[in-house]
Image 1 (spheres, rainbow, N blue to C red):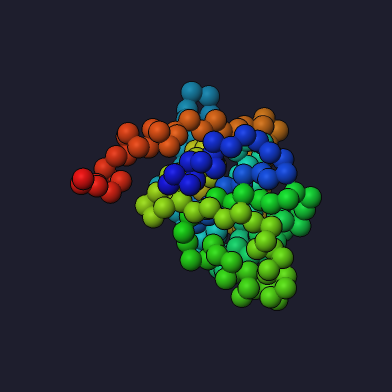
Image 2 (image 1 turned 60 degrees about the horizontal axis):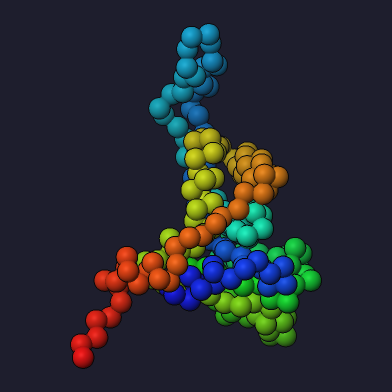
Length: 207
């Protein structure tokens, strides 16, 4: 926990940007009856019944001090999906940086091994060396700022999106709006706060 909090305390450095990564599943839902359009003096009407159309995975890549995020939509969330996302980031937006300071949870796909299982050894090593790895503790995923962005995204999207195209369109519109407004995060919870408010999580040492 203190490792991640120390990362958030760092000043913004474009050569070593702090990037938070998280992922979440989204259920695709379709209306079984067409909703009724809004009429004067009436709220929109939507039937309670819906049709399940599968799920999709959403990655959340968030650079909190730059106010930039991207939300790729994938059919699955395998080791290969994560590895290709990392490669796209390192060869795209972060091609010119020294290192990406990567904060993520302890999911078993979020490891250098996923890069080695997806790419050749030399390529995997090249990508691994451009990352500075930091993990949130078990049951401590709230420390990942990307979760805050997922919360904001969930409140903004419609409840029912029937297909991947509609989901990508809605997510893309939300992403552009947040990026254009440069919505940043000013993280205030510090190591000193943790040692007081979360004292019960620290081992007790009897002298």
